[in-house]
Amino acid sequence: MSQFVTDHALAIYIIFTAVFLCIVVALSAALGPRRVGEKRGRSMSLPYESGIMQTGSARIRLPVQYYLLAVFFVIFDVESVFLYAWATVAVRAGWAAYVSVLSFVIFLVIALVYLWRSGALEWGPKHRRTPVKVPANSPVEIVQIPKREVA
Image (tube, rainbow, N blue to C red; front, side):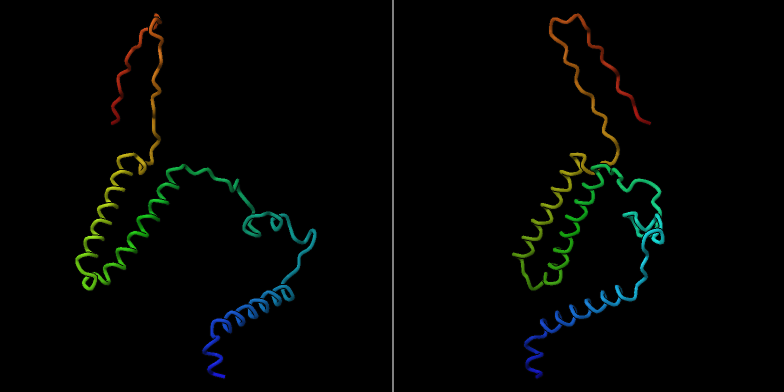
């Protein structure tokens, strides 16, 4: 019997977990409160946080920079996990691993500098001036507007 348990431990675990989940769901359905019709109340039919009245729209518009920053965080966070795993075996890995990790870090720094220089990490609004196209034979004269200094 112990050999069977040893050989099929994962299958036994999955079966016990499935049986336990079925029992819990059945008990919840049998013993849980039932509210039908007017007893449910207005807030129970809302699709948000079961029972809490909503105060506004659930659709919040977030700027693209929020998502970009989140993606950059995930990317650089995963890279730090790779570096941490390398650091645990750095001495045994030798110089070849050191050179490869050094090139990996240099690539990360280049990527970070590129993101920084391209303005992907900026949160403020970007003011762009669209160039005015004036035909060559137009009597309109283009006046240069001096740039404002931000204090």
